[in-house]
Length: 309
Ligand code: CP
Ligand code: NVA
Image 1 (cartoon, rainbow, N blue to C red):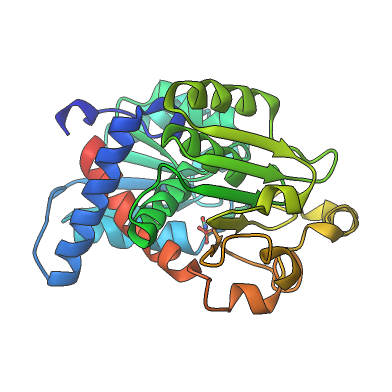
Image 2 (image 1 turned 30 degrees about the vertical axis):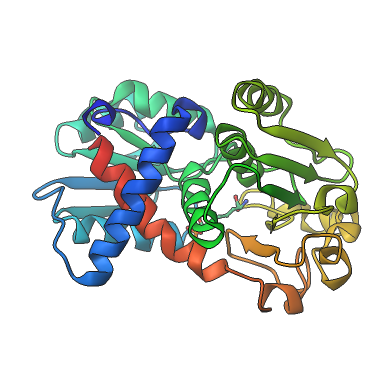
């Protein structure tokens, strides 16, 4: 635990498989303590600053409530309210905030901004989503899968749709845990080549398996988990119409899930667009665990904060 103190949480790739296992175990432990009403004020008197340059429901609420449950406090700092939005540099923001806070969470567009914030900060920085990755969601998702299936290694995850931030973090996580990860996206919407290469290198070490293709059926074949996300992420709203055309055959629906295992689970990071990337029947059906995922954002992030702050 102590060796994670002071670390940033920017991407799952920065953490070893053992460290990720540790964080998930801690998340499960903190979850049971919270449910049993056992106090766990591990961050008493500490403060987390939360910079938001994009909208959020889950991330904001779970970090804020999580800090409170750990005995600390969280500050919601929207880009409209802090000087960063008026052109104060990332460096000066990082240096200044480090004098007050014990940790900083940031949700923004360019991944490089998070890297730069972490460089300029003397306190740990947490990536609360960038255009490139969403490690907090992926960590919570692997906690959820472990709770539901009792293991990670040996399971197959199929990700259908846009090769986006969610895909990248899930892909990297699956490879870290030695799982099989298959993703299907339309031509032109594949995951980032560097992320694929990094994930493949991890998979080579852990015994994980990676498939990047354009055929949803091939990806879903025999899958334990089917995961999808919106076709137009935050920042890509202007492409909504053209994306609806490109992704037309990539909906997760009753016809597609037939190719998965009978006891497959459906996952989505939310927010969702019912009738677009997923049919109502699937997302609201018996196999869907979307709100367990959402809940685990709270527990997984409490583990991250308790470990690094
Ligand atoms: N899944 C997720 O990060 O949700 P929010 O955008 O509501 O934070
Ligand atoms: N890919 C989505 C995830 C939202 C939690 C987005 O970036 O908008």
